Length: 290
Image (cartoon, rainbow, N blue to C red; front, side, top):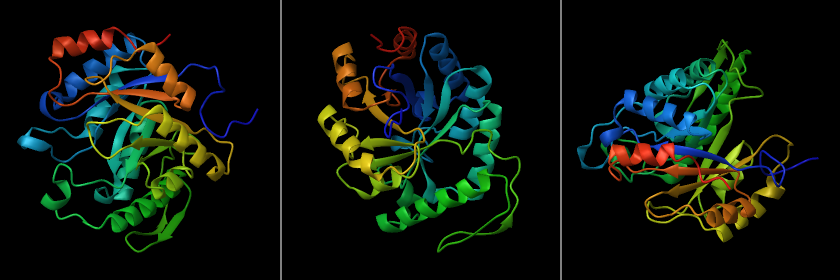
């Protein structure tokens, strides 16, 4: 049977992941790899990392791609990736090389979360990035086209406003086919990011700050908006981010998001929210499955 939204038919289990920053106490790739290993042993389905150049209060920051390589080598089953990478500050052919290498290193477990980015941590203003949201969105679209083309391992050319590729032969190809899954972040109720997401493999909806989550009713609206925009039978994920400091993760709450169309529940942790011993206990307790 053909399902436009969701990786599984209704009634199948939701998947669960943890999501860490790479700053503050999480700036050590060894610690992130250890926590991911604990998560895998405790029944979680994924481990994702934030992708930032700097964070607030001059906190130390680790590179997410090096940390993900460490995670890939200490796990065998869980999906890994970024939530999310702002593509305007990533050279697309350099990112293509990093993602293909990580896809092979993880044996096909990589998911790439992408977005247009913001200046919430001063990264655009500090490093002279484009302030105009429309420019960053255009760079995102061009970067995604370049990534998709290079991942094939076939001869590829591209001419855009911001990026150009001339007869590249980028090998090896990505291990996953038809491509490495791409989840697109978007701030609801802005519609453009959700139209973009419909062309790829998943949506990561947010409401624009770190103090609120998308509600089940909003998530249902998002799913209904995206459904008619999908033109293929390929897998499409709907990702709900929940900050564990704000939720007791009751089974009823998880069920409400599942009923609204979520296929992934992602517990996201702030840099200094939990002492590490508390965090390890939280992860070892496993996901909130029924």
